[in-house]
Amino acid sequence: MKGGSGWTVVEMLAAMTCSLLILAALGGFVRGQTRFLDRETRRLALRESCRRVLDMVAREVRAAGYEPVSGTFDGAADGLAIAARDRIELRSDLHGSSATDQPDGILDVDSDERIGFFLNPARGQVSETVGRQTLPLTLDFSVPAGGFELRYLDACGAEIAATSGSSLTAVERARVRSVAARLNVTQPGVGGVSADIVSTLRNREVLRCEATE
Image (cartoon, rainbow, N blue to C red; front, side):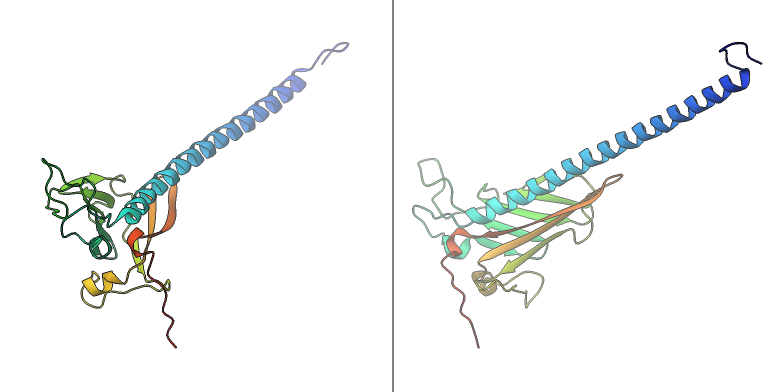
């Protein structure tokens, strides 16, 4: 019972129940929004990481074959040293000749003028090589099989496929004008993101498409 404007016990219990239900619903909404924002923040960071790796590849492709001051290194011919589906090595002559440096054009196994990128399928990781040093660019097991793919394009934009083995031959490499790279990176609780780039070798920009009938 209630007297005057007072509340009955039943009405108070009903009001409290409604309040608790509203608070529970609001708490669930807030938790859901927090998880969504956290997931999107991590996805954005993953996308930026993916893009940063491809930007590194694009930069090195553009710089491949930087011409020496002297020596036997041929920038146009020797800039692209290895061209495979999941591995690339680019060479340049960046330092010039001096009393302490090796003569231009000599790129030994320790040279920081030999830059490569490759997928290690056993570790699910893309790494950069500088001479004999290996620097991981992605987290372990974040790149699935086939998640790092390189394609080599001629002056007409057509893909050049390897006719012998898994890498292009010297003759095939000489036809490459641009390199297309695709990277797919995954992370638990976030999913996968991917990005693509196409970059032209600076010494191959003069190559022109010769249409065939």
